[in-house]
Length: 124
Image (cartoon, rainbow, N blue to C red; front, side):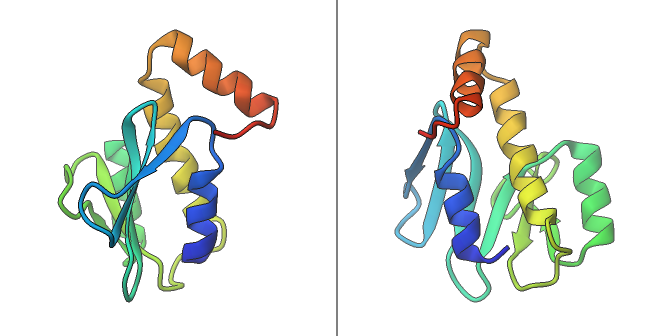
């Protein structure tokens, strides 16, 4: 998955908003006001994603392109270089993991609304 595909994935999830609170080179994606991805445009482009702490450590040990979250909690966030070093499909899985972690932490009524929209095929 390249940077454009990653951005499109983020933009099409139910309830997602896109902001630039840290300047024009950092896109932040939130669901119901809570961040699940922050991407730094550059060479290479990177994305920081929320991650289960034990899974985060495992990923870092297995993939040199995955490091502790840059300017984030090192325990709960990973930063991933989008330079082609990840196995196919892994980035999409990690995006989904991050989004799901955030949605699972939302109030029940908000979770149910987002999941219903996802099942209907609706975005935003």
